[in-house]
Length: 143
Image 1: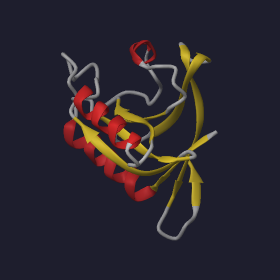
Image 2: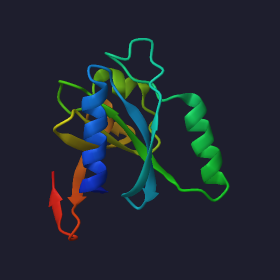
Image 3: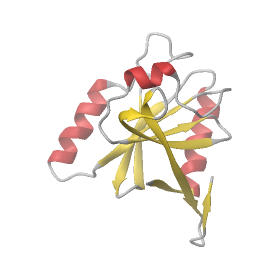
Image 4: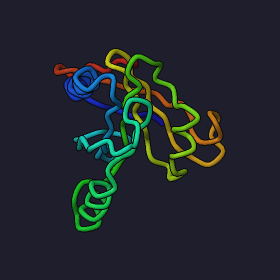
């Protein structure tokens, strides 16, 4: 399993992380078969956005509804760990549903992809997956 994203899109997300730091950012990834085709930045409605994130439930419900009516499929989610590693935290694991969706964690420089599932290797919720990034000329590099 892997998550594929364009280098342009990944760079945009990294810039959003840097612009919002020290607050965490979050959003929804859309696509199919592990390929991100677009994303939607959402408000972080966590009580303490410097230490936690919570995707705005209004945006999440709207995305789910749009998907049901023929809109793009929700592939997963992204959020940031500004100034920290791109590995899920205990809090991330406790908040994530074991729904098989993919997670992208960024810190403004690095990024890593994760699969949310029951009995995952990390905190019983996440498995590491390959993150593939391709550039304007179509080359693919693992990050």
